[in-house]
Length: 234
Length: 217
Image (cartoon, rainbow over all chains, first blue to last red; front, top):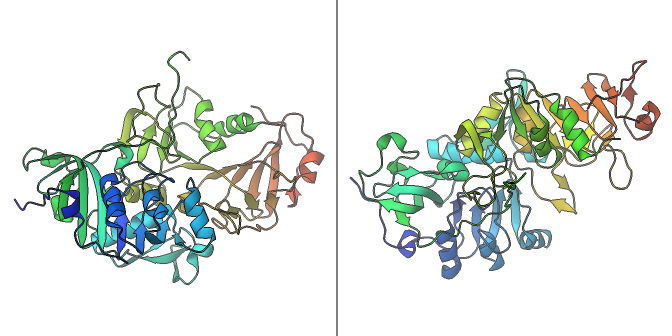
């Protein structure tokens, strides 16, 4: 067994430098690598290009890096729910590349799978298609999209083992499973890190070969963005 | 004239037995509440769940189980979770039968705009561009006119597009419209709303048969 275990978030994030491009797993605040984000705030790493479906909220998730002006460019599909983001974008401090969600996911998957580019119908005839190659397949127009080229990928999983194998829970799988292995170095933070052999190989979502560093997060707040419930009386 | 719940109820009648359905944020989310109880339907949310159930009971919400609107949800028997790439794979490969979403504008050739107002609002397209580019059957739930009283049903969209030539049907507080190769056809009018009222509230031309039935909600 090749061990991927590192003992601290500081060790896990070694080599991340100013100006790098980083993939961040998560959808909204669900399944975000919150320990790594908190450490990046402490490290004061700047001029980052962050690829993430969303940009967090004002005081949590990637919103924490935005607050400290550590992000130069965001590549996302949806960036509502964040006033500071909107302010920086409208004032021109922050560069933003909006990408359709399925295209964003497939650009990660392509990088993970060693495919340089692909064609999708999403965005044909819109601003998103500007400057991109267009081709017709089966009577329908498609645009060419390229795989992401990032320096690091940071994902969050429910359980992991020392070999780097990952298991996700619920909809926290989202972009985490697409981003694992989509950069030269993938860092996985997990809620529970167990010795190799403790996880059933049949149940692994992402094999350890996609992960270079794994650590157990010190604490997970797992904040809920829209708490919606029904009453037991109704 | 219908309220938002009325629009949701009318759209719910379009949902058929055996359908997999993706619901957008806003009025479309309400549709799930009014689907007939005697048919089998599964709701897909593009963040990675099929077989979505109602909101959880108080105290049972789970931060790891949400829908695309980031709301806490539950799952029903037969549900499954998957990653984002897989989720859009099932959308692109047309496994999802019906997509219901909101819009700021729709044009008579079926173009839709719902993600950006230049200089005012830029929240992003989320999964809307992928959904409209691939879905076979797209129903738009929207208000017929904006807050300034201007028609959102147009000859040509003025806002940046989300997709071209994709909308099939529109349900508003006033009417049900079908997008045809010759433009919008008026299919039904809301209870108490006259055909003349609909014509006056619509910038685009309408194809109108002799008799327009009132919606059955």
